[in-house]
Length: 146
Image (cartoon, rainbow, N blue to C red):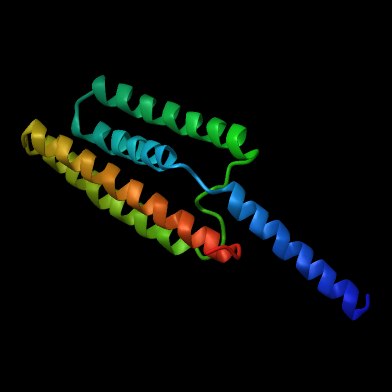
């Protein structure tokens, strides 16, 4: 392979990454849907069965709906746990969600108010929504788009 072929191949890779980044540009409702799924999952720990099972099932249905929607809209689903610059943010979000989930379980076991438990679920949803937006920005930057 000569220098021109190598440069052409690198250019094709850059073009493919830019196309991937453009395709992965999610509308605001997609970030809000992710936040709602996370908030619902976290909120399931704040109520007793069978309501907790129903909320957890709703969260799993929401995840499936997001995957199907992404595949229809973009032709693919990009896993949040992928290698790359987004992974530290993913693990930070996971850690925050675990802390909030612990708080949710504690609130339920300690008999704290429903408002406290709903507030924790809303907090999880807001944080997850914001982190979804941040994840997309990092991903686009990594793929060569600002």
